[in-house]
Image 1 (cartoon, rainbow, N blue to C red):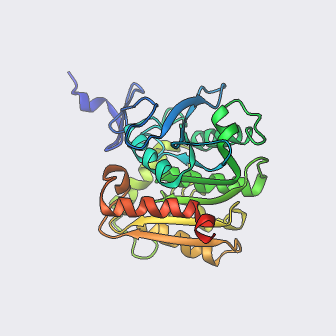
Image 2 (spheres, helix red, strand yellow):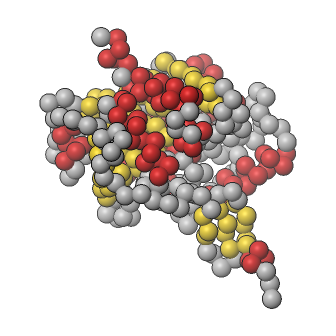
Image 3 (cartoon, rainbow, N blue to C red):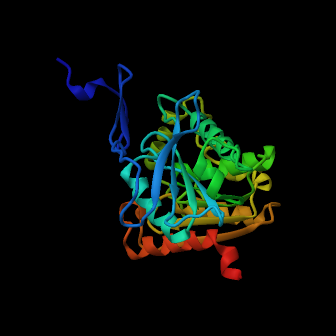
Amino acid sequence: MESATSDIAIDGSPLLLVYKDGRVERLLGTQIVPPGLDPKTNVESKDVVYSQETGQSSRLYIPKNVSSAQKLPLLVYFHGGGFCVETAFSPTYHNYLNPLVAEANIVVVSVDYRRAPEHPIPAAYDDSWVALKWVASHYGGNGPEEWLNCYVDFDKVYLSGDSAGANIAHHIAVKIGNEKLDGVKLEGIILAHPYFWGKEPVGDEIKDPVVRAKIEGLWRLVSPTTSGSDDPWMNPIDNQSFASLGCTRVLVCVAENDILRHRGWYYCEKLKKSEWGGEVEMMEAQGEDHVFHLFKPTCESSVAKLKKVAAFMNQDKALN
């Protein structure tokens, strides 16, 4: 009798396992928590379907004492997880976004998208674009969701995400620049530990062929038709898309011990030299690893990052 491990077709640990019969076992991000009033921050949340076609939902957040008399900036957030694990409804993201909403005094739409390998790339990008179009349908106060109609300033829209979600945020911002989206004025994007890669190392990026092959292997798992690590979805930095970035401000956050750190710096350098012409800010957390702020939300570095992100979205207030 064969052992259970011999039934594994693809070992994508520590994220997931794919078995020969097609079954997918996710090893991370499988918990979910319900929306509602968070007693620590007094932030309220609820889940709303944004696509009847796929049944996908978003989790919406509004801060304490929100009033339709004062429209608030909107953050559209895309969760991370290598395009294959985690959801917008996991405690990881729920516990991150509640304090951010309270600190920044913003409205958040946290997008849940279909995940690979059941729904390979570009499903995550397609769903994220559909979610943003659904958000835009509320411009003018005539959309299906009351919170967006009443409380959002559509002249102050931001996109953000961590890891794979930061990758999505970049590509959606480029799509806005190329195609425009009536009802949404994209002010800026916030990329936390962005999941970009490439065939050739940049700077002091790790050169170990085994490690690089594993990273490419994960990408091939979620994008079976890919051309490899230089696929523009994974390596957008060299495909001349920067000039189309549909915002005027970018904040990139990296962590000193993160294997993706060098890509974040490379992204910033290339963006500054491009024809885009906007403002780029960089924040590096010393001694920290990939998405540390999600797993250690109360540590000094996480609190500093939270405050930086909140300030980035309220820059005009600081100038007044």
